[in-house]
Structure formats: C-alpha cells, structure tokens
Image (cartoon, rainbow, N blue to C red):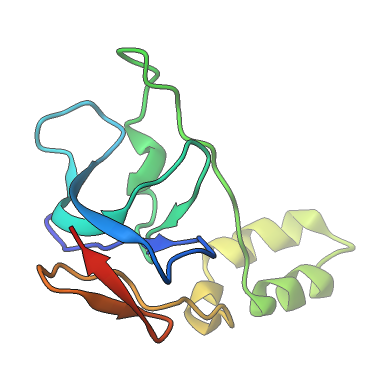
Length: 134
C-alpha cells in the first residue's frame, strides 16, 4: 500500500545524465496512486523502460485507458528456476499451472538488478559513474 519503491532505469547513457526532480504516478488516474514522490531521474523518452522490483500484481490491476493515457506495455520475465519447473512439467501443462501457483520460484531468481535510484538532492552514482541532480 504505502511502501517506498524506486525505479531501475534501463538506459546505457547514464554516466553524463542530468537528473530532474520527478514524481511517478501509477496507472489508475487516482490522486492517491503516487508511486515515487520527488526523486531525481534523467529525462526519459517514450518506450524507455523503468523496472520496479517486487511491485507484484499492483502494477496493472486497476489500469484503464483513460484521459488519453494508453495502457502500459507488459514485459514478462522469468527466473532460471521457472525454466527448470517448466521443463519438468512440459509434457503435462495441466500439472504445471497449479504447481506454479504454489511455488515462489521468483525468490530464487538469478536476475541481477542494477542499483536503484534513491531519493537524494545530491549527485549520486549509478554503475560507478556520478550522476548530476538538477
């Protein structure tokens, strides 16, 4: 409900990026749907990605195409352990779905996320490079 989440930006050109004070809003067009308040991030172009680790089902559940805002594109990722489970049950899909629903295979995901942007008014580092706040 009120956890603090910060985006991970999937950009290659962050080393000289100028960051701007920004707020990120969720998909519901509700005044309470504030995801991040006043964080410093570089300017993003349409179709550039932000990743929020462990956001879960919240991210799309209440989304509607409203006020000219299109629905976000969903990108699904799986851990290497999920691939193992899928291969084990590949002959019988009916067994796979209930098993997957009761397995927290995401907990052992081998995905390594870069450092999240944190709320700061100072310059900070991403991948060892200093990023300037503006």
